[in-house]
Image 1 (cartoon, rainbow, N blue to C red):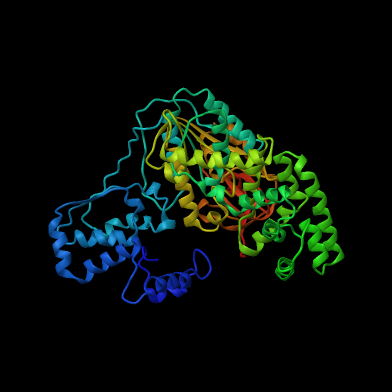
Image 2 (spheres, one colour):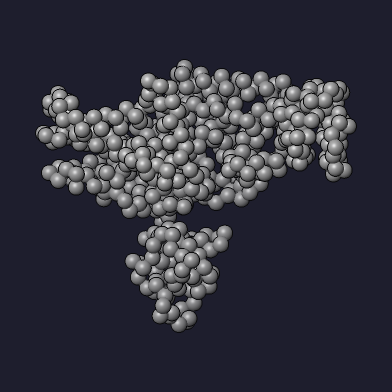
Length: 557
């Protein structure tokens, strides 16, 4: 809000990016000034106060304007409105400003960057000259041409004709695997054949994707560097829950551990019941003691008896089996789904943590080994960030990879819901930013680019990212593309006079009705095809047929 220069008196009306965001921000501001005579300033305060000072204090503004005859700003697509305004004040008299930016790489609007400012740059500086740097010196011919065509799907951008004199280096590789485990195995074996790992990167949208790679790379002795190490995984409450379930098996009389997990076993136990139990002087098996000291229904007693049986088995089992028992027999996974619905957690992310823990546990023999392995990996992540070995592979999010380049790049987990995320799909501007992020990942590669997805995870089928499908459509040969498009409609059907006959009558997100498939939403419009989501099924149709036969009609919600 400060970076966008939203006045304080309008903060209460701000609801995004979550409910009551403006009110929470106002409470934060009050905390910073609650000590009399003291005002705490954060970085955004420094920006907004500096802008205000240059705007209202002419003497101060002149002092800084006269100090700098020329101003150059780099990476200006990541600049916020308040930062742009500071620059405006500094160049107000002489106008000697050079701005270097790539609007196609603006990927930080979530932290205040304002790419729209660049698109309106001439309005602010009408005498400015716009120079397009359209030659790419980094990437192969295939990567430059494909990524350049891919980003043209975005509408809010400067038109560019990217080109390169670099030679062809082989086609972009697109692979779909059965599940994340098979994808990991493929990448690992490819890395084992690489001599110069410092020229290779594995890129992902979310840091959660990195932990299984850290585990496998560390286990196989493949050196790696983490651009933005995420050791928060190891302190996540889900990880702590699993460790507490295991700790209780070492001593089933520990009421302190029992208190931490009893509410997470889908037993429908109330906090009052737990408090009553903790205040009583009991001994022995905590499950048995709980049954004896708290008023329970017969169904609750049956569930607790089942827990007693599970805990009798745990000491003789291997860690991966124990995690599965925690998930399904102790019903921790069901409890997670309930908490996710109640508190707004993304259940896929929580289940992903459990899958990762199960993967790590499958490689050790005892619970002690499992806990030790988690500590080893946490240390390895820290080492990989602050003291990486020589000739190390780079693990990085798409965001942190911006500005870097590698001979070979693996972009992993390219499935719907990850990139673009579900939130990205709800807003055309967010979707364009997600596409720019995908574009940043693609353009990190100099010679070999691999786009990798999977068909199933957490027992659910997964769809390829729409961006992956867009790239697939670009690199397909015409005859391959035609075979992907559904068969043309029966041309004997009479034309619908109300059907859409021109491309300009179609737009992304439009709700339409198809003569055969019924109601749907337009997800993408290509040169030759159109993709429409009908219920849970996305279909690719011939654009020529759709328009010539007027098979679509616009419908209201």
